[in-house]
Image (cartoon, rainbow, N blue to C red; front, side, top):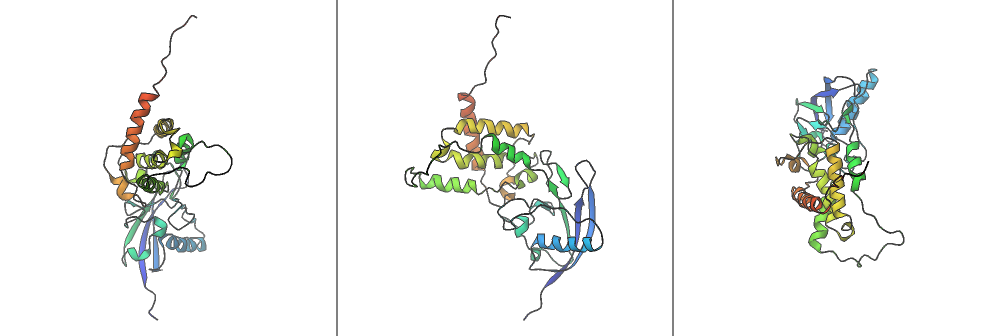
Length: 263
């Protein structure tokens, strides 16, 4: 059997006690790390060492560790989720780095994603956007037959591509304006492309965009970094679709004009 390959790494990690505290980078040694470890497994090992020394472990979010949940939100060497395309931080492996490398690790940087502690940010703004309209209203009862609503294959494929968004927030973290347009457009498109989403299509886009603005995400100026940083490769075409629907919604649902009356 061949010997296990290991790397000696240096980590510069953003540490921040809480949302009210000022943060800063602290340096940690990560010697003898197996190249077969995932990035989060490496952080687990570093944390075990910190706990043994009586120090506070590094706080970071994780759940499935299978590239599905989107919670492993961190910027690694200046890039959301690290150097590999279409890869979440939990699926990034130590073998992606070289022996002796120094790796910087920091949280998402956006006003709408306030840092809670270390690498943990509050992404509940995304939840509120979904609550504003990212759903359909359907009658209760038994499910319809799968063939009762014929859907063109192209639409089904595009809807599935949009639904692949895991809501991690990498698009926001990489955007110079901290825009959430790629996330919101994906959640709008996955329903706008299907028959089930048609009754509330334009109300949905109006309300979700309004909530996005209320959360103080930045505007989209077509830099395109969001698509390249997205671990699921969500297309910019969704933003174009959302913009078209939003224009239609603004024509259909015009704001009410206040009228004067007797006092």
